[in-house]
Image (cartoon, rainbow, N blue to C red):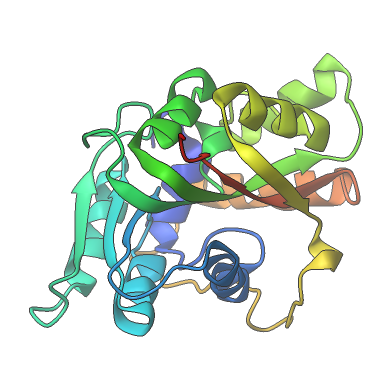
Length: 241
């Protein structure tokens, strides 16, 4: 495994909708963004391609998925059939999106941004959105400020660059130029427990290191129950007059 042990773990398990809220939250975010047939949509950190397929098959959007992890990209590409001409997968970084400016009507980032250098990734989201375009992001969030020791524990296990409060996330989006920013807690979004769970597809037997990551993940959830949560954010790139 690389330095991103948690992301490697998810890739090994080939987890569909590996973000809080699962597929149901994805559907709700698509509704919030008012994505319609023919819209150009970017799925940042597309993982196994589950959201790409949903947007292509059900919404009939023209969707591009990008992911930096080669195993995720490989699995996502295998899901695209010749009939799905409006879906494509590219290996790329959220911190340097290989697209021209103002290309997309909507950008989705489901549990991705926290794993990136936000000084690069968030401005990139803004850049590739059309004026009037919309962004939705699901992000790891802490309910209260933590001391450095606790923050480092979370950051080490998940490989994230930083853990942020809702206020810190809102400030980040605003500084990038986004407007009409909304934050949603778990209980503000309708959840069905079964649909909210990610789907696991074991691509191979878990090795000792993968099991260690899983146990650390469980321990973090128990230790920071009620403190380490998530938010769904929606926002717009205001159209220039």
